[in-house]
Image 1 (cartoon, rainbow, N blue to C red):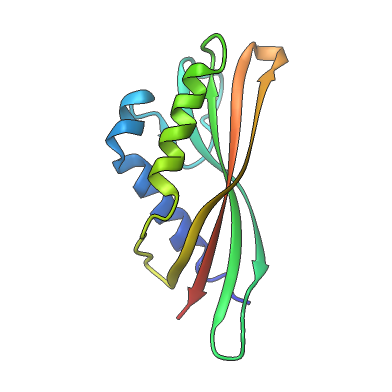
Image 2: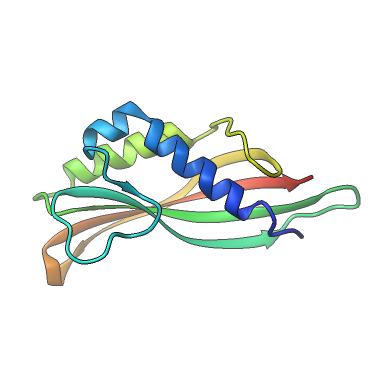
Length: 136
């Protein structure tokens, strides 16, 4: 296994999201590499947790990355959050990202969880993607 591609994958995913004009328009450019501090109004996207498992074989080092991208909004209902989630999915599924290190073999949607954050009257959708990578 190699964890060496992790930073390059995160950077490529972030750059892909920032460059997506549909997503940028929906969140007014509020796309963060980590959750912003304090209380943020409106709708934003942030990269979240990552779990990685070995996927090496006799000839190459590889890993399967499961990473979360969150949509958070104070808008009533889930409609706006779901529109943003769709734009994220459209931008990433089967994307051919160029990594600074390693090679992206595949990038697919795995699951999502939509919920209301009771204390803050916010809505949140956590999208989980799986990326298969090889280190070179």
